[in-house]
Amino acid sequence: MMILPKYTKDEVEKVYHSYRGKLVQRFKYRKTLISHMELVYIPYHIFEMDTEKSKAALQFCVDAIIGSVSVFDPGEAEYSEEINQPVGDVIINRSDAEEAAIQFARDFILQKGMKHKISITMRDIRYQRMIYYPFWIIYLKRSGKLDFLAIDALAGDVQGIQMRRMFLKMFRQTDEDLA
Image (cartoon, rainbow, N blue to C red; front, side):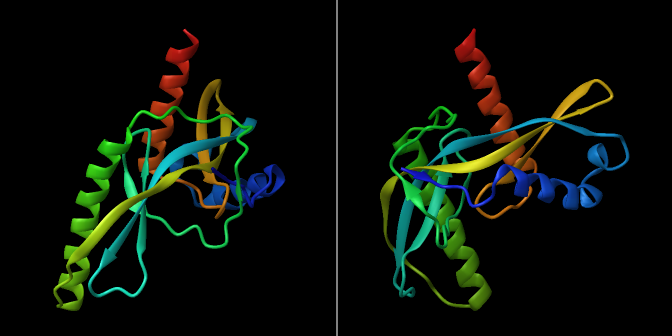
């Protein structure tokens, strides 16, 4: 199942130009040109957790490339069963993703419990499905060197260093598949 992007190519280019002045030094002062852009989909394992204190289940996503975990809130995302865009390879299997999700959930519960000075117990964590989440990759050229920037195609947010690691691993995997 794939989430459909809300941001078009033109809208993402506007996001890049509006953020350019706020970005890190590697984009800020040098003449940087957009070489090209592409929409890619990253595979994520989705888990749902119930606790004794919560009324609604909390969802976590584990990316299937490096295994990083975060809270998942798709909002009013639109889904499609058809996948017709470049997709990252699934490297982290379901059982490894589940281990990462359980550890993240325990840390999350501990942090929330300490913050609110209450005891929270996890009742259940269960696998929901695999989804493919959209990101725009902007390939940049400056001084003869190539770089890239990833933008969330659902929220329009420029991605940071953690996501950069994931995309680099995805690019390496793609190169190995082509060799």
